[in-house]
Image 1 (cartoon, rainbow, N blue to C red):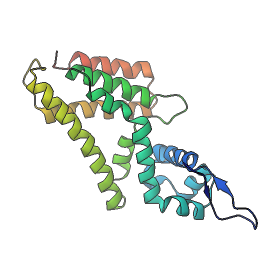
Image 2 (image 1 turned 90 degrees about the horizontal axis):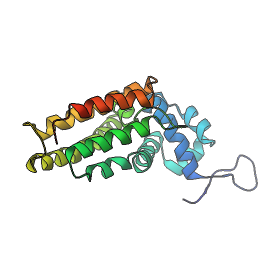
Image 3 (image 1 turned 45 degrees about the vertical axis):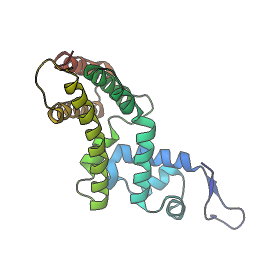
Length: 204
C-alpha cells in the first residue's frame, strides 16, 4: 500500500506515514483493549499519527476498527480456511485447534483471539459495530457447520451428531483456549486442552 501524505505539522513538505504499519499498530490496540476501551489517543499514539491523519486515511474510529478486523482475518485467520480442507472432521478439528493455539501464543503478538475479544467487547457499543462483528462470526460458524454436515453425510462420525451442535462445541473449546491464553496459559497447557478435546471427538 502506498504511503499517504497527511496534513503537515508545520509549513513545508507534508509528513508521510506507512498505512500498513499504522493499521497493524491499530490492530494491536484493538486486539489488546477491544473497541470501546481503545481511545483515539491510544490509537493515534500507537500509530504515530495525528487525529486528522487518522480520519483522512481511514475515516472514523469505526471504519478503522473494520479495517483492523479485515487485516486480522487476512493475516491471523488463514488457518481456518486451510483447516476446513482436511479430509476428515477430526483433521479439521486438529488443524483448527493447532492453528488457534499458534495464533493465540505467537511471540511478539497479543494473546488470545481478537474475534473473541471483539465479540465480547462490542456487545455494548454501536449497533453497527456489534452487528458487523456478529455477522463475521456467523459467517465463519456457518462454514464450519457446512463442513461438519459433509462429514456427517460421509459417515465420518462414530455416533449420531448434529452439525450445528458439534460446531458450537468446537467454538466453545476454541473460545476457552482464547480466554486461557489471555490469562497467561502456556502453549503446552493449551495443547493439553486440545489433546483432551480430540480424545473425546466423536469421529474417526
